[in-house]
Length: 394
Image 1: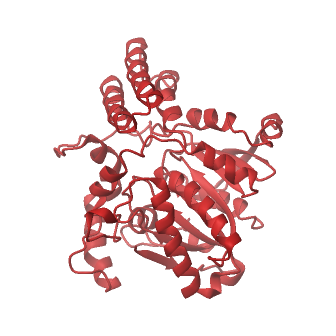
Image 2 (image 1 turned 90 degrees about the horizontal axis):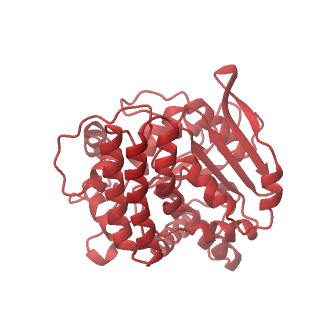
Image 3 (image 1 turned 90 degrees about the vertical axis):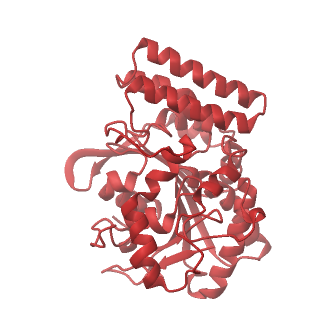
């Protein structure tokens, strides 16, 4: 498994005084060392120019390409691929044990897991295993919380709200709403029958129905049109959800200058070369929810944050609110009683950039004018949120 660490680079504090954040990308099969690093929160963008809103100014940042086969992570044997989130979690625990042993300077620094999309589903499972490992003394670290960004926690809630969300934003007419809802119902039926692979296939069918009825809405940000994809790939899922994370320029960057600079990547390993295998191996687990894991984390006192972009379709905020309302966590009634608080956009005082609510060990951030990739759409607001979650003085 490939990992990439940046020590915090802040004008006001040494890395010892700032948290460590591990970033997990979606897919499954999307690379954090590539996409999260160069397109979202790393110190350089994909043109290798400095990013003003890099998270490295507020935390040390650890990118891990997971599951195995993602990015520069690789396996030589077919049974090396993870097929479900518990395998993903146990693989990650091996890496974290190694990391905190090899970098003991991080053992007493608050450690947070931040994630996006499918990364959130993995982050929840990893957080639970990490909590157990710390209690048993097998991993030495100061786990401080997990943040689930536009996360695939309850896939069915996402799919079932696509129609209503698109309809209220004038992206579907009555006929389109009926078509999308009926495709979503088929996904629901497969889930009720515990046919998870079939549900993944029907999820993909539902996306096609959405695209046909919206003239190709962009699943990652409803306000930007999806460019026409002329490539004929055997799998629509790969085209929609792995390919955008591995665009030609990022591919060239990672397999060219970055690979050369790293100097440790085996000859036979291509960055992103196994991404499709990663997705295919996880297909039977893809639509399974992990809401119960979030409940366990909250009940055991782990700090959990959910944050979501207003313009995201694939994991729309409506769907996130639905599974949150079903949590069995005893603090939920208290959370529900609270009204949200507005946050100014850090770059435009007086302009609302987000709303948030926090109660005991749970927080929810509604990030405005952002799609699925919040840090790329609203970098200053995402950085502000990071500081708030890791309790740094603003």
